[in-house]
Image 1 (tube, rainbow, N blue to C red):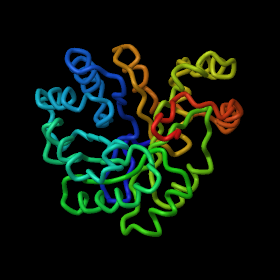
Image 2: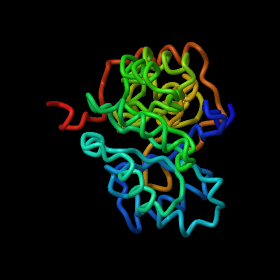
Image 3: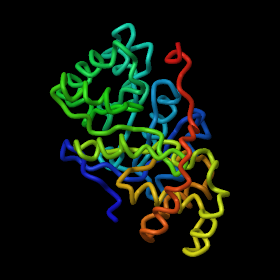
Image 4: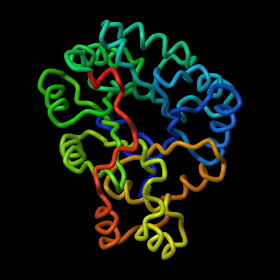
Length: 272
């Protein structure tokens, strides 16, 4: 399996990236970033809501790799959508990151009554070249249908929670049929499935960890993954998922773990 996937923009995106949710600015960010780069990571996923764009920006500034070799994702938060402050919010993200463009800009959550207007501004940002691709996160089929109907650019990515305990195959298939790459966040479900017997059995067969098996399963479903860690051993482990293949029986057995379990929570401002 190739380590990159082609987006509907024609540009390539790494299938594996590092999620930076809850990664602290300063030494934790610097250490995780530098270790990840050394291990071959090139995609780094942050968001305005994570409050660490400036920390990632500092790490990028001290990196010896050419900018073009890095793939940087950030996202617009809900309050900026509600007040129609999308352009300014994006500009602030760029400033904190110290960049003149990001590789992917996402609508973090589909705020009712706002996301179509937000998408129109993201299209303008894409056309300006300041985002090389635009997409969404946590969108369902109905919401994507609205984007496809009313927008003029098909989202490049839909970032959703996806793992063996939460197999969102309806939205996965919809995206893949419409040329939208699915990127799985919380792909390890914060450890919730790693002790399952079937995971241990398959891991033992391949001399791998349960985490590696879970990530590989997601890749073979045609999705990309952005596991989060700041530990060198886990960063390395999570990166070693491209040199083995699960068979059809194993894929089905892992899918059988599905229980619609949410490891991530919905923001309180969307639960009203």
